[in-house]
Image (cartoon, rainbow, N blue to C red; front, side, top):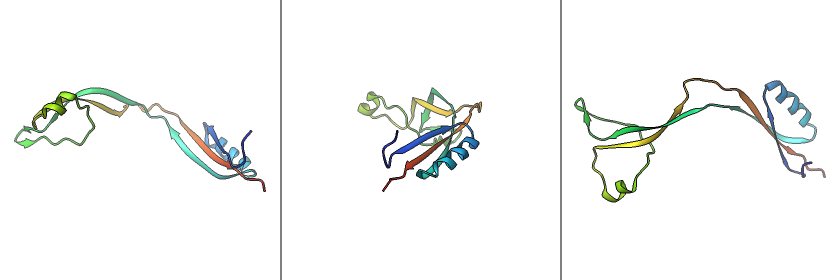
Length: 111
């Protein structure tokens, strides 16, 4: 049961089901949109990072990252040669995943 102008969300594991569902929905629904959803796992770990300093005659350049800021770092104001622990996330090397599809549709208003 769906209210007039309500939105339906449907999950389908394969594109053939999306096609059949969309064809059936066209009679009573508008704004039918489908999005593919692919599961991708990430490895999250803590690691030591260096900020600032010079290595092999050239400055260490690191990409900007969000890292934990401990209250002692904020209060004491550390210098440029800082070594800190950061939480890093990267996609898993193994690509085990299964795709799926989310279809959204709005129920037509009966006038």
